[in-house]
Length: 186
Image 1 (tube, rainbow, N blue to C red):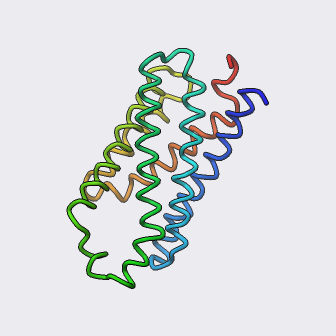
Image 2 (cartoon, rainbow, N blue to C red):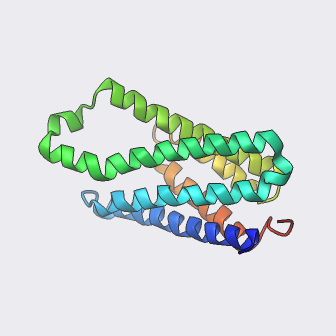
């Protein structure tokens, strides 16, 4: 399999991941008590890893150390984000049944760990967005969306817009990669 074909596969998984995230957002509003939304959220997060790999592959020749550091931060942040989503999908629903007081008031350690995970996720994807804008292999506007969406997630009331915007950015980047943008030199 060629590298260009691998990028296309990874981008296809990214498209599916963005659709999982959009489905989760719809479920959040139509049936907020459904566990299915959490599973869709987790699936979308897991598939982010493949988009990140594809972005790195198409940028690695001309991004040097910055590209590698960006990929490492993005990978660590996304991995931690996936772990938080896993806990929210499987552990928290059980805690609300068996230890509701703990689920409603988690310890400071858990809160700090979760916020640290989200912060690394945010930093990683902001760096990825800067790489996309700086190198111009993919649409610069999709890079701008990758920069803005994680920042919005930390602002009051803007968090409602952050996840749909991030899903749109991931979908757009994945679509570009799927259509072969940036793979001509691979």
